Length: 438
Ligand code: GDP
Ligand code: MG
Image 1: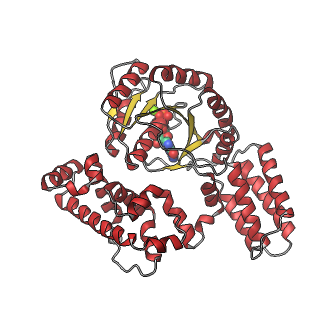
Image 2: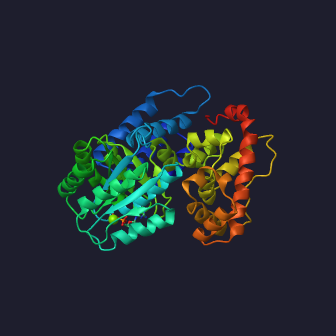
Image 3: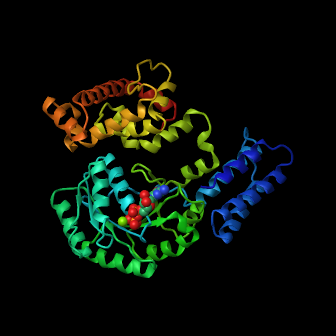
């Protein structure tokens, strides 16, 4: 999404000569890129007008060059453009929390339902999935399979055609069993937004969800505006997830079109895989567009670590309260770039062997295994791996389809991480100095 903007920015930075001309050129490039990404032309003009005005009027603070200051302006204005810097409220405000997913056929509802379940499971919630799609023949199997992959139970009635009834019973099923979050997937076989909103109201009246989530495919670009606007006014408890941002050049159009309606985009889907769901934070998103995320420096790297670890996680980690969920997250992030490890290496005076050292080339295979192991653990075991005895080890290994040695190895890694977290606790003052923000 918006790759050209980064290039334009680096041209601006490396260019010499007249500042005003460089600004003009950058703005022209930015306009071109945004329009290519299907952003509404009027919005583009408003945005670039503001950037130009600020760039020519504002004086940079001492120690900062005009060009650097200009990047800051672009960063701020683009962040506002994509929804500002309010953090989406993703924490359920009560338990149980019932989420109803609606959206056009093919928008990515079922995939997103599973991604959400996985996301919240990692946050420590007990999550159940309900499939109320009676339209697509394989809908039940699709969600069931995804559920198995992430160790989340799925409620469905493959032979029942009454979606409302299934939804109601599914919610009841999980609520009566003390689950924290219930996610209901629907059919959304409509191609018109009126029909979609009507179906949403019908099911909603029956199951009284705490949150209705509209799933929008980024490929519809500017058209996302109408859908989001109607939805935003139709349901006060609505939030939006924009999917497939990885697969379309129109992502910028979809995101800005939703942002301008005032609706909150909570998550974005950035791939087909189960962990390719991100909390949508416009400033972070813009930082990536501008390539700021590539800059060296500890603070930047810390920003990246926070993609994976919430503040609560870091707090837990630093206070020695480690559990398997944190190990799990570390594993998932390790797969990407190993942020925790990089951070640890940057902390002076912290001379200990960093756990989760994996032989080069073997990482992917090993991580897969470990994730399978963690998926076969019960909630109790995730929170307190200490209780895993030999009998439990065998059961987990069996469930994950691995050897008991593999389980023991992971438990050993856990012990090492725990020691590390205890040592880090003593260095909390130092971490504070490094502006890690906790
Ligand atoms: P539904 O009809 O709304 O339930 O849509 P599905 O969940 O079945 O998704 C339709 C297709 O979109 C599937 O092939 C998914 O793998 C794919 N998909 C969903 N989300 C994403 C995403 O964020 N990125 C990409 N590239 N594909 C996605
Ligand atoms: Mg579906």
